[in-house]
Length: 336
Image 1 (tube, rainbow, N blue to C red):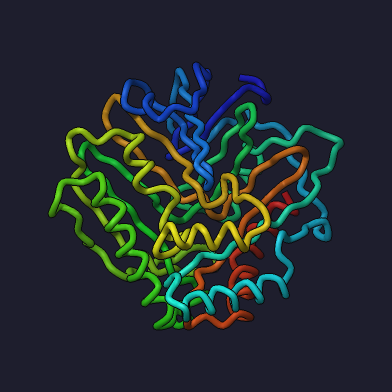
Image 2 (cartoon, one colour):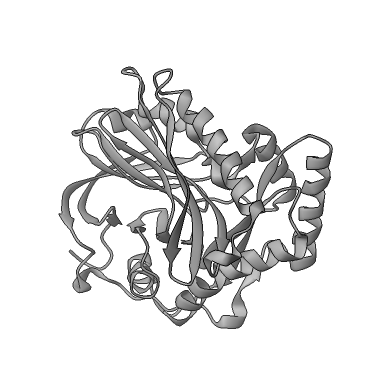
């Protein structure tokens, strides 16, 4: 395979020999193994490959990548704008409009124009510098993504559907606060409601609550929610019920999405969406939440970062959390 042919690395397997690309979720119930990306705003891309092999792409399949200069990065929300937006969300919480909103910003930088920029190469740099359980990289026309996501959005094993939302981030476990725990429980309840829309009544449960997970440079609070899918549930219904992920939207979800649209100046795109794979032949899947994710668009490299805002949020501290989440990965991309 050349260094420019379409390729997808998801779920620890590399897909080669692109057969088709479509935006119809119904194909995920038919046949084949698909690389799947759904952006935060709902646009879906499903790519079916002829061959899947374990492991990352070979060195010979990697193109070039040169990161932007360190001073090139610009944020869609400046610090004062972000702090004011946090204060506005706290006003809406006080008024009873919402309980929690995930407020995000996008960092963007111009890429050097001297060479083709390969997200698969960037994905390899992330794998080496920031190993993640749901790492992914895709090089398809119109879709150039490298992700080091630590968060499970949806996994499927036959009729079993599970989700593993993250809420609560710190450098060490002692950084995790009561605010983090309360926020995690709130999102667990939201995800339970999402799964209940496509699962058999009485089967949705929470087998793990507030587990501490270690990741490079960070710790997270993670919970697990699972249920038994209804026999008739399709992938279109699953994605419609659960998207966008609850941990990166807010509660109640529809009200939180309205707030996000009013306060965030740019669409999130692949950030905070879903990235992973679906195997229709064996009815299994693994989709990650598209956090810790870079994407290339029109010669620019983009990266999203955000924080969950509750009544207990300190606006300045929430800004610092977005910087903490971004610093290591932005450094890797800049130096790649």
